[in-house]
Length: 400
Image 1 (cartoon, rainbow, N blue to C red):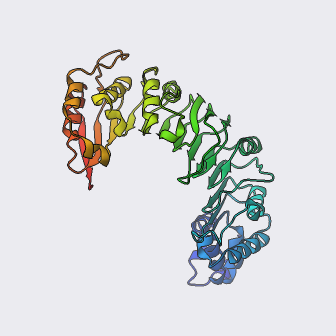
Image 2: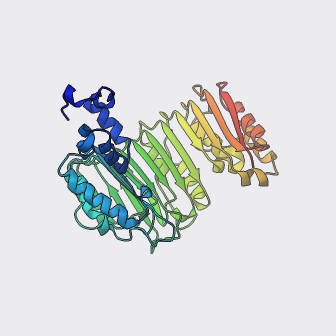
Image 3: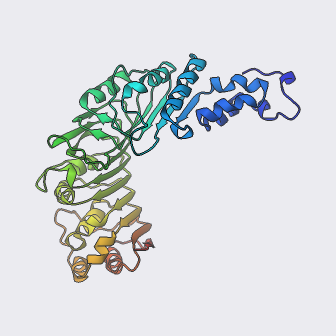
């Protein structure tokens, strides 16, 4: 984008900005806004075509056909200009009458992004679940974000084999029927299931084998119990599981055991409901200590057994610096026997731990709870009776 002083009007300071800064500004605009910059001045007529980031948002259009016509024309005029990032957001109305129903409709756009060497590709779809069909390969793609897609074993194999430098995979509200996620390059992975009533034919393990993974976020698995094969490089993990992940409370899992083998794990968040509480409680007793854990976030479920589960966790995490507890509104409402919690203070009875918990590095405790939750007093009392440090304690109440 070479410019001469003769092309810059006296009041045109924007055009005088460095090319890199102009590219950064253009990347913050939607594709439609970027195209509209052509009216600023003669020099700006084709700047949009060299933008390295394309943000295509259907919300800016009055209908699907107008949006498709705009994107098709945009891609033709761009030619082979390299891309850094390519995002498509498709959402019109909840009726489903004016939305994408077949991946084939956006496949040419995806091919353009991959041919243009995009390192980031995002398809944020809200409608019928889509299935990736056709070729999907790039030696440049590092981050892939998909929303409302079917993810089967064929799709997973195609993505990992066809994208050899893929480092970040985000599957948001995707229906996963795959049973294996295996990658030697992936560093960050997010997998969340949709709220819709979709079910797999049978319960199976979802095997996750990613030795270079440093960040893992999984939520609301449905008919797929996570089985962690190799996640030894993990530094941060957030796990949200409910009854739909396991066939029953007698199911088995190795989630916590595998996480305890990740020697670099410093941040862990666990939210469990229903059968998942019992399944992971058994796994907890077979774990190694989480010696490098610095931040631990637990939900209502840790108050099981009169608070013994909570005590077990702080014994298994001797070097934590921050503890966060999230208490629920139903738990507060049904709480009627505080003596169960004081019993935990007198006799923790946590078999399998090595020593009395000390947590000499614990600096901060946060308790998020409904306003007026009477359990807070007993929880604080239990914690202070079982740790050596005197941490800062913040009670963050919310209205019921």
